[in-house]
Length: 50
Image 1: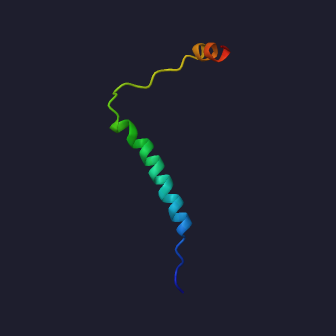
Image 2 (image 1 turned 180 degrees about the vertical axis):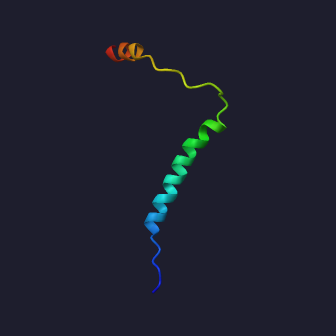
Image 3 (image 1 turned 30 degrees about the vertical axis):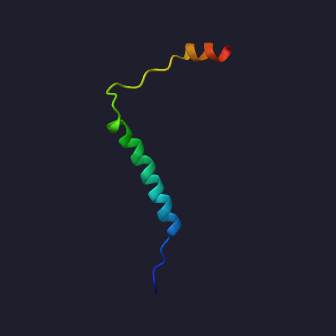
């Protein structure tokens, strides 16, 4: 009995591998060696109120 190849499953798996791999690799390839800036919620609230 031949084994069926689940093409949709393999495509989804490869898509998630590419997505999560790019998320993991992006910090390694970036030129900045500092952590991202913190978001000040007061500043966000002030800009949202305008």
